[in-house]
Image (tube, rainbow, N blue to C red; front, side, top):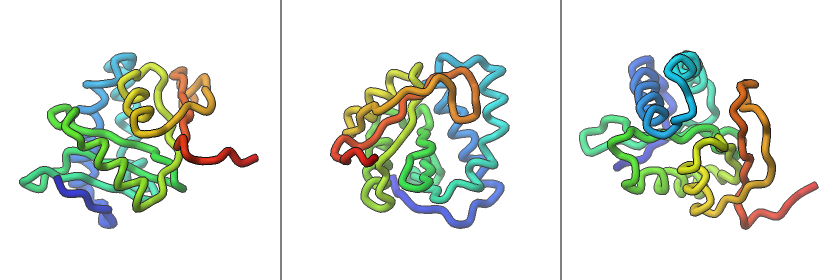
Length: 153
């Protein structure tokens, strides 16, 4: 695996990362219907184009198999192809993001216990719960912060 920040967000790359997103979501977001996945999928190319930092992990033949998006030190997205899950890719990406971009926050779908457990293992703690996701859909989010951060305000 090789990790790199992407500045040239070509249409081909965005299409590949959208496929990674879909593969990852279908393997982990069991609470979403096929219809809902398709609706959300339509938003992914724009999110990939506009997120402040887009970081991609590629396999041995340089095919993108995982990515994360970071905005203002918040992890906005982290998705890994189903075939590469549970192989340390998420951990390596997140540690890279913490080190290079200072990631200190993330929001996790409450209905995705695997993701919640992952972020807890990585040193994040729940600090609040929202009834809807950031787009207003009825999927509760757990807002998390790095456990070693002090509360401000």
